[in-house]
Length: 211
Image (cartoon, rainbow, N blue to C red):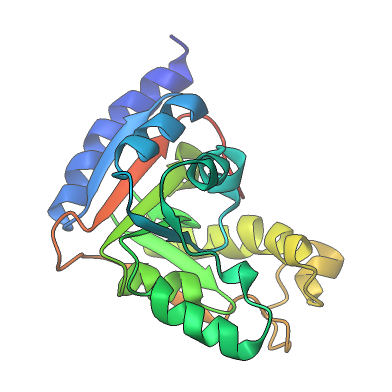
């Protein structure tokens, strides 16, 4: 076992206790493959499943597995008109399971997310019966302030490039604290407590995922 993996396991034990104190559950998987299987084990067949923009779930192969499984898939990208998108959103907020990542999390057991369209942060905060969060251990931060700084410096620029946003960070690789029409940092959500115990399940992963 490497020193990093040893650290991850010990940190995950402390993080699980911290998240539980904040009304959330957490577990640790050392590899991406283990994390994928853990997530799939949490979703009963026949459940309605949806997701926000999440590179971590894509990279881990979770979304591909869900699409091939026996689930009721609600995919917002299938909407062809604004009216269809709005109708789908009504189904999304009532889904059984919402799959997402988190931009960062703190050692105190808080999730920090920053969004553009904000469907992701909305569903983390309220709506779907269960939220499953996949987060690699490199997203661990000391405080909410550190977590927000991580989003601005490490997560938002590559995310802006991913979605083709016309923002300063997409052009320079550095956050410009912009108010651009394409800004992907419109809403900031700090999940410090889940008033529905266990609604949010966090799967921590030892291997790097997402931004």
